[in-house]
Image 1 (tube, helix red, strand yellow):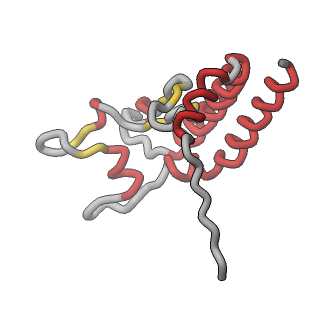
Image 2: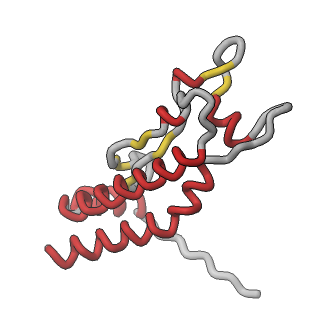
Length: 138
């Protein structure tokens, strides 16, 4: 089997230039679509999270759209857990991870990744539609 390797010199610089020139309207449309999709992920994760006290469900949240300093990509982070859900003798374990993946003597009760998998395809298509919408409008 033959393979080909392609190296693009100056790609990081090109990405930075595109980030600066990407129309604000496109970024706004993409960001809005990402936030809307993040809210759906949170809704589904909240429905799946075990509710002993409701404390973990209350920590499900998303960030506002951000530009990654590493590669210039626009993203929205969806998170679970925080200071209020740290457990252990020295508060060194995150309850969200223990519930999602399990621990010694505690079976996994996934809530976050199933919500992501359920919404992954619609998340991507919503962003694509937002880009198309913004491009047609400009």
